[in-house]
Image 1 (tube, one colour):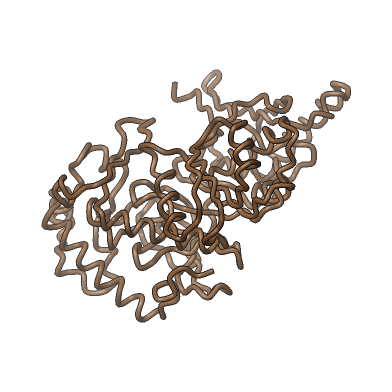
Image 2 (cartoon, one colour):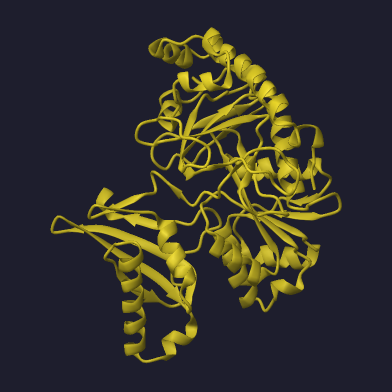
Length: 433
């Protein structure tokens, strides 16, 4: 279902004209109101008058997460604080949190793009959405909440955690749609089994999952265990929160970028050069409607590509390929570049393994080591030790043959690895400690 036919199906020429108009306005605004951008523009020898076409976007400087931290807390705001009606912040696990603000109009735009997101998943008035994204400083919970209310769905603001209660509410309240991280969806399936509840017997028909990279193999795992459609959602707190891009139920192949609010580019992460449509690189976003904290060319570190082919759903927005890795998630093990998503793909393709794993990276005698802990089905632990050893050796060979890394595999019983209501911690890098 298309929520806003006027904008979501705009012809390309009209969309580009709208983007250019809004881009010029936002560039003028940040130049006049944000000292950081005025200084950066001068450093690059560019002024708002130099933006005459969308192609001129590449003349502008990038913005990074560190820039937001350096201007903590409100140095990136483009409006007086009395116009800011909401403040969110990232978790700040690697330093000071990144702070983002919203005007009343920003909140309205956010609800609009989330209404599009949920509508594309088939959620409508009368549905009951159990929103298990975290509320509070994290942008996920409230971002999803307002969009679902806008389309007329009944929202259960349960937030993350308290998994047994999640299952009870799902069963008692007639939940028809769920939003949370994909790893938490798998955790909820395990809890439901413990509670003697078959999720396939519940009226849940669709899940909107995001906030962490996940593969199509994990999608199929969730869909099979829940008997639902599982759709991807993409967003970043720094850009606006959830709703920057979304999958549609008809295609499930690439996420539609809300291009009337954001301009997307793909760049070479090493050189910063813009790459052509269809080539893989780092996603970069420019906000063109945000008032409180407009962002110019924000480097996401997410790896994807832009897809321009028409979609059967009728939306004309460009799509981005499903994000399965980040440049800052990349591990370098003895000179080999490794993404956790590559390891996950092999695990998901191996019969007998469960979709729960952890990568332990260390350095011993000046050499990098990688140990992969993988949960396997219960029945494996009733077999002889020799069978487990052979299984581990097979996985080690697959990692070596397919990815080119030498890793020690440790097979563990189900529910050994810690579960999370938020983003799963896949990597423990002891080299950084």
